[in-house]
Amino acid sequence: MKRVTITGAAGLLGPYVVQHFVEQGYDVLSTDIKKPEKPLSRFMFADLNNLGECYDVLESADAVIHLAAIPAAYMFPNDVTFRNNTVAAYNILEAAAGRGIKKAVIASSECIYGVVTTRKGLTPAYVPMDEEHPILPEDAYSLSKICSEAISDTMYRRKGMQVVSFRLGNVISKEKYLNFPNFIHNPKERFMILWSYIDARDIATACRLAIEKDGLGSVKLNLAADETSMDITTGELLKAEFPTVTDIRCPVDGYHTLLSNEKAKKVLGWKPVHHWRDNVPKV
Ligand SMILES: NC(=O)c1ccc[n+]([C@@H]2O[C@H](COP(=O)([O-])OP(=O)(O)OC[C@H]3O[C@@H](n4cnc5c(N)ncnc54)[C@H](O)[C@@H]3O)[C@@H](O)[C@H]2O)c1
Image (cartoon, rainbow, N blue to C red; front, side, top):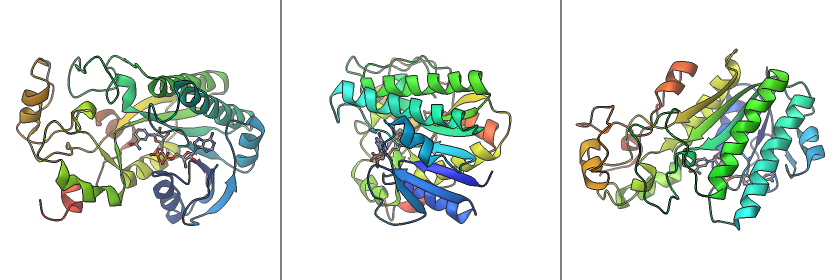
């Protein structure tokens, strides 16, 4: 299990994942429709909307990490986002199944719980939101991620292919920490994502653990840091923005995340190690 194809290599998250796999001794083929800024591994251009191109990028892979997507709602017309993300996920997993690949990871999103883009007002059924929380999408991007998870289930049923779908919180690259001082004291900022975040380097580790583990089936796992992205206690945040949420299942006197990462820790033996307080100088 040493040859990995990683899609979305020219994006925000892709380079962190590619670099991690290269450093861990994997033979990496990275791919995207755009050229990555830095050459970190072998690279091939491919548009994943074309099934044949998916077969080509998986020619010598033992596993695939699928990160490519339009990464948010309303960046493009709804049908463009839905078609691109759903067809790309279908094609890469269809090609992986066709090539006999046994392990895959896909990037899903916390958006499927209805956070980020709801226009009707966000009210979590309970916090922290775990993988059992109701799925409440309103937009085409979230729906494309739900479809991607359903495609994963399908490929597991059809071929026994293990697929780990990571429901990612807001992805933070090293540069993005520079922006933290601008919001960490204001509960009105980022409440639509329950103030969650996840360091790109911790996602990279989770991706590797996901393909190194056996017997996971098709599983959905939230990935979030242990603490919120705020310098306000979790209790104060909830009081300020979600006073009607009464089902609170974590301590609130510290900074406990409201996007649960317990299942990923349990299933993968993963632990996030990059925390904003260590990366933001002086707050
Ligand atoms: N950034 C976040 O906060 C966040 C949060 C939750 C989930 N995610 C998911 O994580 C993944 C990575 O996100 P990101 O922030 O790096 O996004 P990004 O836009 O920076 O990178 C995605 C890459 O996918 C490529 N791509 C898109 N469609 C393609 C296609 N049809 N064929 C080939 N390449 C294609 C793009 O060219 C781009 O380089 C995405 O699936 C996104 O939906 C991101």
